[in-house]
Image (cartoon, rainbow, N blue to C red; front, side, top):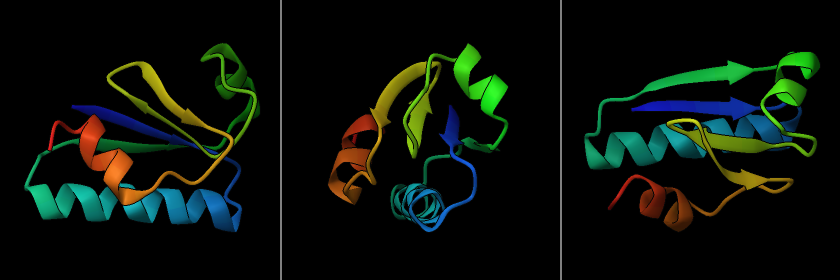
Length: 77
């Protein structure tokens, strides 16, 4: 599983990354989590509002911090 957390490093972006990692730890799912901070790369991925989360190339959330319950649903749990 490939997960990207997109954002410039603001508190909301950092909280989103923390929640993603916590959800992965709770489920035991092995995933590669990458932090994307480059605005050009975000634009190429079609993301214009941060924080954002992509799972296996699909945009799951943009412009808000997702609830852990949402993240777990994306992970299939």
